[in-house]
Image (cartoon, rainbow, N blue to C red; front, top):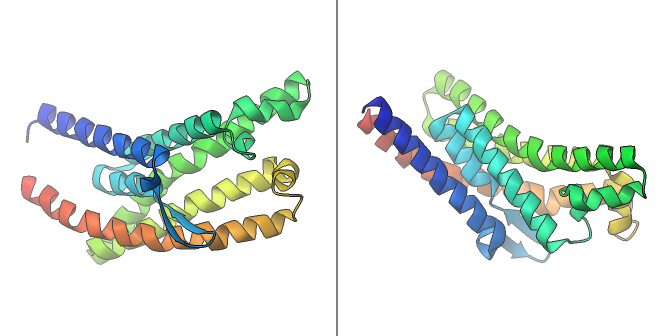
Length: 215
């Protein structure tokens, strides 16, 4: 395959996965309800798949797209915890203090983008390292899926704990922050860490075969 053709193919794949992220972000297709409060978000999956199939740079880009979709969603729909992901709401926590407003805005952007970008980086690096050791696409993709998903969950929750513990607790009825975060891990983080590797392996294994044949 020529260099130009390879670039066009990669750009097309990035555009497709980016479109999927937008669809997941603004439709019910972006989550799987397991009953009650237990819901698995799926938006991290295109990031993990793209990182495995196209490398670290593509994974980081798709993670940034994921972050941008989150930024748009929380800005547009403004749930009570919108300040976590949107600087347009976190600045209100500063109560007129300009320096605090800048700080809170930066914190929102960090939580919104950094964990999502790191999904792609962690997934790509882990996949390659495990594949080099085992030669198994399935095992490498599964581990990358689990760790990519947990990267997002744990870093977002860490960001909330470090930057927005008090307002986040207040937005959740003044519950104890550790109880809120623990519940998030149980009802979101664990289901996502189970679903992500299953779908990732199912997609990556046949796609890797196609990639190998095209070389």
